[in-house]
Each structure stands twice: as structure tokens, then as C-alpha cells.
Length: 322
Image 1 (cartoon, rainbow, N blue to C red):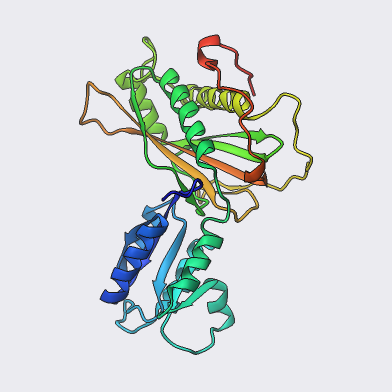
Image 2 (tube, rainbow, N blue to C red):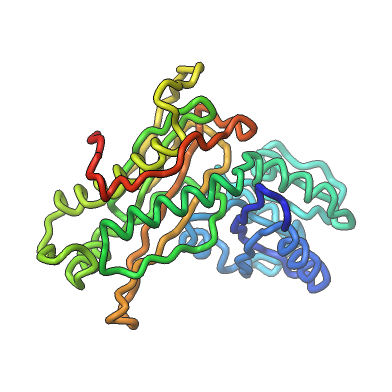
């Protein structure tokens, strides 16, 4: 826990053996893995419900719907649904995997040895090391921007974690480029259109801004929030004279029907969920805003630097429009 780059990750846990289940829970707690326990029969539903997973822990001899031990069959089904998620398979046999099975299960490990599993998790789930000081700085400037945009809301955040999922949360998303000497990529904000409209109707925003907003106004509102965070990030982490040396680009693929977005990289993304509530209405469903940082083009944690203190962008009104 003293690791200066420690982050959490959420994984689907499909394990039927009581002893191994207990061992894996302890293992996950040590590494900062948040487990989502699930039965084989509910695996696909759980996959549809959780859009921010980092991977799957699965036993080879897991009894499936027909009662037979066929965790590999389930692994292939999970891989077809979400191929970006790494699957960590606890092997219970010595037989060689078929080509299809090997494509689905990229991280097999023997039942009696957690060391290979630890190595797989460290390399796959935590392949990018986000410095704690950077994560805390992002939280500070993002909370300031959200509280500026929604002055009547109580804004809290969940613990930051990393994700491999590429599923978009909600219907409204913004995307803005980030570029410095140590990073190149994007920041996203995502939320549900109905929840954002309801939050404005409750009075989470400025006085006089109600809930009779069309989708263009809601888009603009989230865009302004994104701009505030970007401006603060730029002021704190991007020297005005600095640009990344590598100017390569990769296609960004968006499938609106599947609510899927890919930045052409398998690296884990930094994800933070913010909960906005109305102190006057404690029973009201909170407005959730999901923030992701995707450093798909360049990320050199060892070169990360904070060259200046963050400035109060909202107070000065100095925004750079995009």
C-alpha cells in the first residue's frame, strides 16, 4: 500500500472452489483488485452490467450451465463479448489449449502457484504506472471544475482505478486531447443525458439554469466542464514551450450502436467516477460523471513533472475554447 503508484482495478471473479476462492480474495485485496463475485450462469449478465472492468479471474473446472466443468467454454464466450478484457485462467488440467482457447485465455496460471498470476496481473492490469501525485492533482483540479459548474451540488469521488473496458458510460461524452513532454492522449467525461437533465432540474447548476434543457445545451454544459478541467491540467502539467517529440497518431474507433470506443491501445486507462448529489434531497439518485484518461500515444511516468501550481481557471474566466 506504500507503492507511490498504487491503484485499484475491478475484476469479475468466477471461482467455485471454496479454498481457492478464499485465497483469491486475499490475493486481490493485497494487490488492490476489487472483486465482483459471480456464478457462471450470471457471467454474461454481470459483463453487461459492469462497463468498467479490468479483467476476469476464471477457474478452468468451473461448472457451467449444463453442470459440467467447462470454464474454457465460458472464457471463449466472455472473450467474444469483450475481447479487450484479459482473462486469468486457473488451470486444473495439463492438456494443451486449442488455438481458440489460447486466444481467449492469454493469462493461464497453475492452481498451486499464485506467483505467475501475480506477474500476469502486474504486467497486464497495472502496465501503466500512474504516479500518486498525478492522480491526486487530477482529482483536485477536476473536483474544483465540477464544483464550479455545479455550485449547488455536493461533489464526491470514488477511489481511482484502472480499466481495460472500452464501453462508453451513458449517452453524453466529451473528448479532449492532452499533450505534454511526458504524455500524449485524451481525457473523456461521460454521463447519462437523463440524469444530467434531472440534476439541472433539481438546481445543481447556477441559479436560473433549470431542467428544460435540450441535448445541445446539455452537450455544451459537459463540454464547458471538460474545458475547465483541461485548462487546469494544461496550466499545471503542460509547459507552454513543451511539445511531445513523437507526433504519430492512431485511429479512434467509435461504434455508437455498441457504445464502444477504442483508442488503438491495450494499455489500462485511468478512471475516476464522480457522484454529484443535492444536499437538500438526500434520497435523490446521484448524478454520475465518469472521467477517463487515455494516454495511448505517449506516457512516461518517470518524466512526469508538475511545473506550476494550478490556477483558479474558473475564477479568472480564462478559457480556451475547443
